[in-house]
Every structure is written in structure tokens, then in C-alpha cells.
Amino acid sequence: MKRPLSPAFISGSMVQEILATDPGALQDGKYNPEPLKSRSREMGIPATILVDKNVPAGVNEVEVHRHEADLWICIDGEAHFKAGGKLVEPYAKKKGKDGTVNDLELKSKKIEGADTYTLHAGDILYIPEGVPHVHYTETEGYARLWIIKIPAKEPFPLLSVPGWK
Image (cartoon, rainbow, N blue to C red; front, side, top):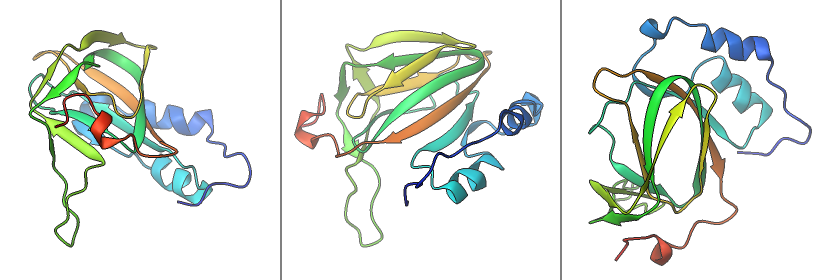
């Protein structure tokens, strides 16, 4: 993505329009909401902005992004994170079209030695590239979060990822 040559502005009214959507009408999981997706692309914003809603415990796998950091902002509800520690039996999940493994995102079923954080409306959690993490809500819980994916200048070294073989 080409970086903008001038500041990129997204109005508060656009953000409020997205946030004002009835949470019950929103899909569960991560998605890039319109018109924010198109506007960000048009302006060349080098970060991806996602919304995540209602991720129950046990659904997400532990992950490490070597090529980007995550900035999580809790809009409403309550979400739990385990971050830090090390991956247990990690693997690279994505494969390229040519069959090659893309090791920029690593996955695992478990994480050991992580700290636990609980986010409420207005709380922010920054997870640097290379740090294992997973997030979830309780079975009857509800949460809606912004995720801002911040590209790393260089990929985090694979052999430095905690738990990687």
C-alpha cells in the first residue's frame, strides 16, 4: 500500500456512524467495516482498522504476527487477553498460492506464561509484533473492539518468537 503524502483524516461522524450500528445487527468476529475500509484505502493509510465483536472463549487460536503490531481499543463490553509468554507447539498456518508457507503469522493452540488483561470500554492494549496473544469473551459475554494493525518496519525475527523451534 502506498503511504499518504499528506495527513489522512477520518471524521468523527464516520466513526460514530460505524459505532452507532445496533450491535445485535453486527456480525460476530473480525471485519473491516465500510465506509472506513474504502476511505482508509483511498487515503493510503498504511494501517488496517478492524472491528471485532463477541469472540467466545476457545474460538481463537493463539497467534503471533511477525509483520505487524496490534492496537486494541475496547468500544464496549468486556474482553480478555492473554499476551506475552510463549507459544506451545506453534506452526505457520497460511500457505502461499504457490504452496510455500507464510511464516509472518504463527498459530498455536496454547500459550504458556502469558499475562492476562481485561479490557472495558475505553481501555487500550498494545501488542507489539512478535508477542504471542489470544483474546476472548466469556460464554455469555459481549465485547466490541477496534483493532488497528500497525505494519512493522521489518518482520520480527522468526527464531526470536517465544516458543518457536
